[in-house]
Length: 183
Length: 155
Image (cartoon, rainbow over the protein chains, first blue to last red):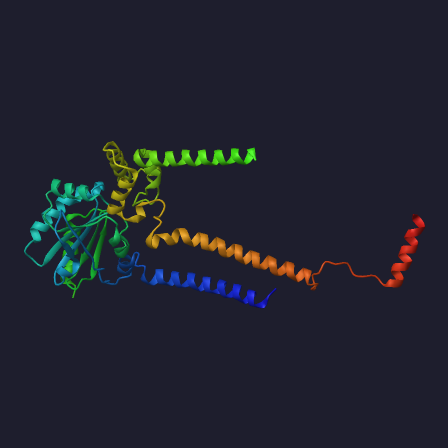
């Protein structure tokens, strides 16, 4: 067989393998899936991925950076999620209790119809800021495993605590206390 | 000649029927069609195979939009706007998503090229009389004469 052809075919095969390996390394290093949740489980305080998303019901964008210097309760929810309906009144009550202090609540509506999300916020009288992430960009970045899920961020924007599933009043107070105490 | 004309007619008719069906599907889509072409964003299977709450909500929206007289493209565009292109069961044939269509074709073309090149190389080696050449070895002329004489005795 022609040596040039054989060498060429080998070069193509090697290039394909290298390309696939590079893709795998890139996905593992920068893909970001479960980055926060995995790091938190390992005892670290990972930096919360910053996002800039459209406010609900309407208005401009909201950036997580705006709340640097405050403890943040970041709640991921969807209107079609039953447990989200159960925990929302508690979130609203707790937000009102901490309002005016160095604590902010932010809701992230994920994988939902925007209209449904707006109707949900109206129905439950939610007054804390909410953003819309229909495409679910934040889900992979934070490693959200289901809905609802709540992350507690300290003043430096690091995740210090996470609750998968609906939060209880004790979870909220404990998470906020840990976020405030984190230096 | 007649056979060719008949074949051409059948092909043209099939193309016409196909185009008419595609047009009807675009203008008056059925829920089943759209449910097989859209993906549940939570369970990542098509809507027709999912009973997740968001899938049920999406199915309800599909029926509502069909009742409003929306075309298939309009309904799909609305879902893409809300959930991104990952809501489509097959990626769109444009932009970055075009790669999903191009890569398999390029891979198949490369495979054909590699196999063709190998086959061509092997066949050339055989005709060149290389180590694999299939021609029978020539006999010694004296032995060949004796063999012919022996065979002549049987004729």
